[in-house]
Length: 175
Image (cartoon, rainbow, N blue to C red):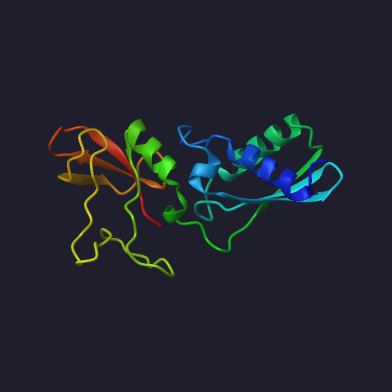
């Protein structure tokens, strides 16, 4: 017999396997937005989903895709609830998700070097010695890059160019 906890873990894995609609190279689990699955009754579950930011237009597509995957697995009633606390941050992206972004040609968000609340900074993140943490080119690895636009194909990405290989690339902005 499958316990409720084991079933929740299985359904969490299924919900997390859904590709991100804007970045289909990574899953919602790798992005860190699927937080939990709770069994609410016979054939009824609730999924906790935290958007990357409050106005994220992809949340509706994420919710529908999660519902579809769980319905296909035999769950009759699926409720996807938006959870805003704790807020999502780019620190929630898994190492595997960061690797996949880089391989896809998108510079992953830089690692934050502080714990606690996320401060809003419009400039580059800083290393432990206070120096700006460079955005590395996902194509050649060079730290010699420049910002072309604060926004790219989605609000969560910026458009940059490598000054070494001259290739443009998206950079997943830090939050």
